[in-house]
Image (cartoon, rainbow, N blue to C red; front, side, top):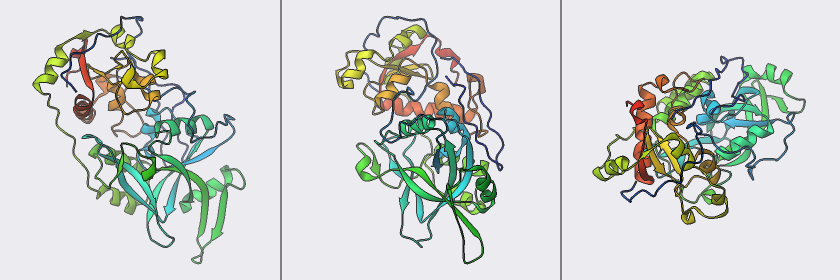
Length: 379
């Protein structure tokens, strides 16, 4: 589901974001456990990142709507549709440079589809490294959302950087940002240099449990999102060219084994049965390995038990009993400012990514069966 608080970057150099309407849609060879008896007739709805009350240890609990955080997106969050997917509202966006900071893809994970994600590494002054990105102005509640979706400190943590505004952003920033936000100086070349203290997410080795810091080419999907975001906001051409030249990992081909195909056919689920197999209150009080019931999530008409997923409990609570097809498809960069809300909206790129994601899910989770309406997923 998409709520009314969608991302609306205010920027002189980028067109407005289009908000999309809500939508409802619908391994292992181990014998699937019986799903809990249906308790509701609620429709299958799309994925979410977690309850707003799940406060992150990274963020201030300040809920004053007048308080502003300045957050730098340098990876997928440069693209407006990714913020829309995360239901993050933006008050303004400005292009910035992080000097002596290197962009890497060294947050490596055990995934065939998404082998790595962007990260930052600081270098001594004068190193020549630069990372360009977008400085967003967020309310406290949206900063809390960002902390939650970026790992609650388990993968990324939020750290402060000195972000230099693009020179063409300075005048409007001086007019619109609160007094004292910007530090302004004139360089030896006569140019103005305006900096703002802002936060970005960075990953350190001691933050990780299952993740490994190893520079690895990201997926074609992920790199294309960065490129699309950079183009959308009109970052410097030379920086866009650097992103375009970076190597990428192609998507895996979807192929099920005979055992996986048997597991898919083992049981048919209704929407009500899938919803009933979602989060139960007792799950909050014991580790997943002790849960007596499966936690069901569907993707492209196939039902999985994801109780042993490495994702946080907030992700499991929010997404259990739901279909993630449109949410997964929405991670693909297409028009930059919207996400698909109906299966009819999916293009070849969306379908290819959903199918590739099934490769990871079939390898990582227990296949429980299929949805009764899986025929609508004709890809």
